[in-house]
Length: 377
Image 1: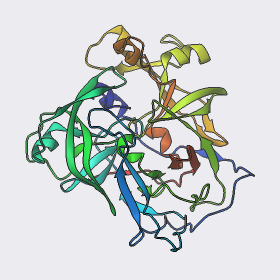
Image 2 (image 1 turned 180 degrees about the horizontal axis):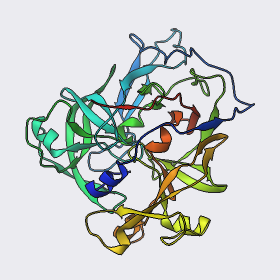
Image 3 (image 1 turned 90 degrees about the vertical axis):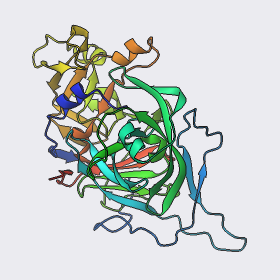
């Protein structure tokens, strides 16, 4: 989801990220291992890929993905390249001070960006934009709204955005105001990498080895899992063109889950908590956790509750602690936009190994090896 106010981020960031106990069940209908177990396929040398702006893209209207990555045209009579995995880049995943994944992406130089697969457009802090000497911001006709109801509608254009062997020119970023002095420290977070650019690729979260891997999307259908013999497939839909949604089972109840690597912890809409589980602020096991922002009003309170099980297609996360949150998005958008029924955040994601194939609309998943991302010293 879009970036949160500091108050709620500070509260959720107090959670320790740790791999939870899992029970992974194999799908008997799934294919066997499609590669080596020792690591992802190497970055290819001289792979013919073509980058183009998606037709109809305009900097004042969100089109996702902003760019397309396609195989280069094959000359007449030539043999088409194989359809195997083509890794574009592999990044080490680290955690910033608020338990968000950060990776070093090349802008004018390598800069740390938070990885937010649950956001919309990639974002850049105004301090980083000033340091990069970018042009004046433009107005974005389609502003984005965060879970606290906050919004932004300014854009800046980054001349070059590079992912390993692929470079995008004139990439658009939502501008987020901040007041950090210049020059920024080398380990300062410059912004957020969102679906507007992540959706160009297939995205692999390898929490067992603390790696974020990006692939060209033209792989052989169904042939992506190189790290395990058995895995599950989870079809998903794209809500609002960008948000990955799929069903999971929470304590025996089916919930619609939105995948969000930008959320340090998982969240359940308080309306769903009441309708599905009969939970409210006064229920046994429900604890007050804080306020959505610095305004300490009753309607801004959120809570936490420990459940017994969260699972998808046989992969189980046991004893997840989930935050119960009011739907402030609806309040700020005249009921046009709503907080998802449930958000699967980073605390639970680190228990999984996920390969997201956007073009197929399928997540390939196994349990993760027990090595969550490590914080920077």
